[in-house]
Length: 137
Image (cartoon, rainbow, N blue to C red; front, side):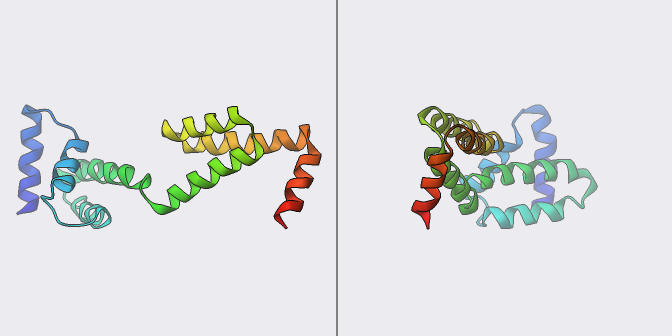
C-alpha cells in the first residue's frame, strides 16, 4: 500500500510542486510513519529497487541522511571538539570563524580552520605549544 501511495505522490507532485524535504517532513515529523529516521532510510533503500520509484527513493533517503548527520552524537562530538580545539589553539577570530563554518553547514572548512590555527601557533609561538602539552600530561 505504501508503494502505491508513493507512486501517487510522484504523480501528484508534478501538479502540486512540493519538495522531497517536505515529503520527509510530512512522513516523519507529523507522525504519519512511526519509525526512526534510520529505519525510514532502510525502507527507502529497499524502495530503490522499484524502477519507477528509484529516483524518488534516492532523493528522500539523501534528505533523511542530511537531517540525521547534524543530530547524530558523533557529529555533535566532532563539532564540540573542533570548537574546543579552535578555542585552545586559535584566537577569538579563529573560534568565531569555526563556529560560523559549522553553522553554515561546512564542517570540513571548520576543521581545516581549526587545524590551521594550531599549525600557525606552532610556527608563531612554539613555547605556547610546549606549555600546552606539558599541561595535558
